[in-house]
Length: 366
Image 1 (cartoon, rainbow, N blue to C red):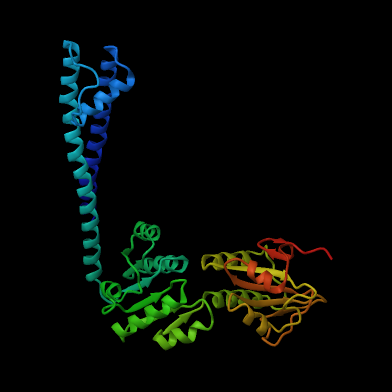
Image 2: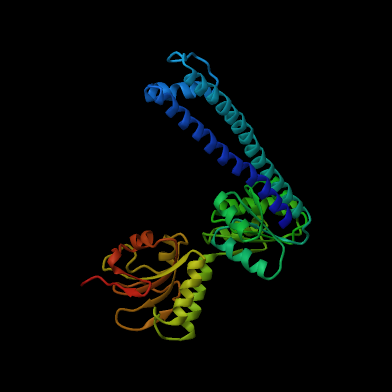
């Protein structure tokens, strides 16, 4: 395969080098011819116009009479060298375009042949944060895999990592067939779009009733839909992050989260790799969710965050708070969230300065 790639690079590289050389040649001819006409007393505008007419063989007529031996010689040299350069330039441009098309064609065919040779492999739909981590771990373990992604930048990233890739939309059943869904052992659909994951799950289950399907879900309400569509397992990244934080809290039972601890830093790196963040905020007096139950607050957030710890204003820490726990003014709320926390702060009517994030703690003045 390396030899084929090398040959393709050579086939493309040679026309490109020729193109550069010929462009330089044509430019030199044009500059020298223009200066030669100006030497005969022509203006720059007349000289450059005459050179372009001659090189491109348009023949609209001379702007000035060619009536001296010197001008005859300059014009004939410009015709011979300029026309030759333009013929070569045209041929090299055709070579470059042809080489690019052949390279793309052979690359796609080679990729399809490699995918067609796979059996009991893993198909990964989506090459986002989770897709990247999953593909890396599977490759490290020596498992055959195919990545389906429609984003050109992510396709380039996956190819650079050495993965077999299909630049297509995984919601298209023909793409799943091309990826070998009939022979695959596992399909992991990890797109950040719940509707797309449900559709891919439905399509894959109808194409191969035996394939194991692992689907990603963003909102908790999507889990039932994915299972009904045929997913064997459903992964909710936000839940995983919340569980990880809760486990770390319970490991040192009864204590609050220490942001500078090595364990907490490791946990935050893990969360960030999944597109999650851990934050804390101070519940304001008279806020929209002040006095609400934990279950109600999480329901209002539509699965965008999960509360994993409450630090009571009067002292004491509640880890893994029960859904019936009431949130009181002045409490410190530790939660795991997807994306930015702006919308979550808005739910609690909390100003940005009340947030405790990363290694720094910020509290509003009272």
